[in-house]
Length: 176
Image 1 (cartoon, rainbow, N blue to C red):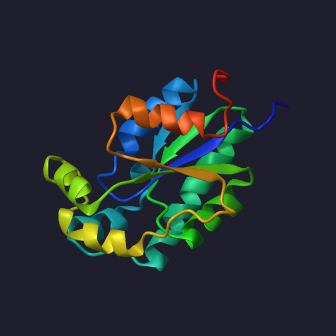
Image 2: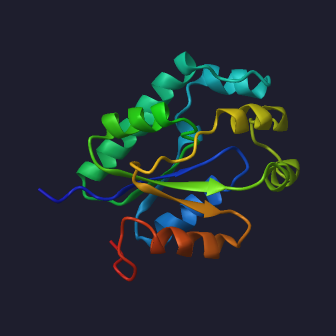
């Protein structure tokens, strides 16, 4: 049986760059990428598309799917990077418990202005700009006892990925 592969969640509010950074981070680490948006139940997508914020009851099955995906892929020895908002400590705790392996969080952090500018230029996503304020109010920064790193999103995707690798769970230069 192989050792569990690293489980990494790229977290932050909508528009922070989770998908772009997550895809590049997964590639740099020789792993696979999953977008947690693809794991939402249809009702969650419908609510968010209508500008209705999700509540914790809406999020539970989704967070459980995220954790299950990490558990499944990690068990095979694969490095897995998932882009998931994971805005609250309780959500991250649920992911950690369900994953059954250590999970490292990369929090993409930026100002409301920077994120709003990015969202205004994005087309074809179900998350409307109107929910940004709600997400920013919901966001709880990583706490000192949580395995993770906070990275400023003002740099290029390459610089953000480099920062995540330098401060992340895979030693620099050691790609799995």
